[in-house]
Length: 215
Image (cartoon, rainbow, N blue to C red):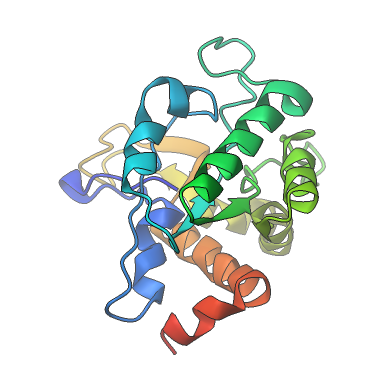
């Protein structure tokens, strides 16, 4: 979701970076997402404190974690799905509501993964289900981007889905002189596609936003 720097034609884009482009003038959207953070480290580093201080009654707060909570080799980030990760999400929801704001949970988007037979597979394990469970039990609005991006990657297939992520040849971009192969972070094409899916979910889950969307 994070905003990526524009240095030397950097091809990486977070879907939160292009999200404001879908809304009419006058709608203020702040993106506080940071690369590499989990539901644990985002709080431990004080990043949530910054968000919490800015939240006003009536604001909507989109909360999406999962990719980095999985990293069991990284104790500063790892959160087991059915215990700590769940507790972190519940706390974000509770604290958002305590400020008079409306939380919106989002499941993590899919990584691009295909097996030796070209069949897509998921890497997120129980994390998306925990998000869905918390949303159901706490009556929280839900954007299920996990299911949406699975359908997108399956439709694109193994080869064409590279366009959605960072498959960069050496010398193609000044920001990445050695090139890059990254099946987690999005290209500009991927960021806009994921935003398209987020808008589809918003129209179902948060219909009160629809009048503020561009045609």
